[in-house]
Image (cartoon, rainbow, N blue to C red; front, side, top):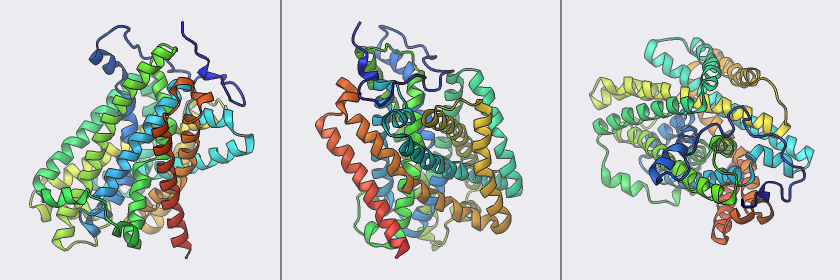
Amino acid sequence: MEATNTQTKNWRQESNENSLADVHSSVHVPIGAGFFKTLRAYAGPGLMVAVGYMDPGNWATDIAGGARYGYRLLSVVLISNLFAILLQHLALKLGIATGRDLAQACRDHFSRPVGVGLWLLAEIAIAACDLAEVIGSAIALNLLFGLPLTIGVLITSMDVLLLLYLQNKGFQLLERIVASLIFLIVGCFGYELLVSQPNIGDVVSGLVPRTDVITNPGMLYIAIGILGATVMPHNLYLHSSIVQTRDFGRTDVGRKSAIKFATIDSTVSLFLAFFINAAILILSAAAFHFSGNQQVADITDAHRLLDPILGVKLAGILFAVALLASGQNSTLTGTLAGQIVMEGFLNLRIKPWLRRLVTRLVAIVPALVVTVLYGEHGTSELLVFSQVILSLQLSFAVVPLVQFTNDKEKMGRFVNPVWLKTLSWAVAALIMGLNGYLLWDTIA
């Protein structure tokens, strides 16, 4: 048996509770099986994390970016996705190597006041994310069935009961439902891209970074919104926890194998998320930017104009179906992340249904207020603004994550190599720099 003391070194206090204790190590991992059978056992957490990278908040920023600036912000989507792949690798490695999720690691490393401060910031990020999911689902119900937004918000709030039911049936069932909804979204956007017929040369050119993304204030605002919508703080907490649902050997050999297969699962899943995000922006650019509809900046206008501009009848319906699937998927993972954050930071064990109810209320109240006072236009602006809030919160999750995974005393043999230490700090610095610039520019 190999040493397992990477779990207890250099922490202010020892971990005394497994993350998501009711499903911890609940998914069987075959011993001595072939590569693909083992990978199949690890497949699932990556898709659940990828959900956060294609939630309704992404739609708002991608639609606005594509309509106003064509394909020029595609490079931001690509770079954000590469950031996401790196950071999610660090998150899963932290969880597997230390036996702590990111929230638990923060609690066990920082002083109580710092830990509480980070918890509050994480809760703000989750509330902003949940707000986008509730509004996005409500808009989808309005587009598909004509339901008023206020009714849609209330219906969406009830899906927490579905989450409670599904988790009691086993964690892999939840993963399979999430995967099914993701592939539904992929199918919808595959059709949208076929009928929108984007210029392939312009799309490829859009993947190359441009300086005007930084120099143009309007483009920079949307670009940072895309960054906030793509690399999401709550996903780092979520991933570091749910990788521990796999029953891998808690030895160095077992952890090494788990990190390898979990990274493959995560990377493949995030490239799927990149396809969806890029597809939304490409569709918006092809349908609106080049047809003289650059003012389109919200989901409702996009849905209304798709059919007449593209000349097909299914485009608008499939757009709304994909939006509803996206909102429901994000709700499932967002409420789970809320449970992980509260339990991890505060070591507070309250009944899961109560925690998820609180998460719902935090999102429902502002969504209802904005819906009643400002209607569709206000909710669309709130979607974009929520993503900027997420981006501003991102540093407070990224910096501790990089700090912990770069610490040999905490990670043991799984500490980041020098090249990864350098790259991860560079990414963290870039995120902090962009967010600082946005804050300064807004105040100025």
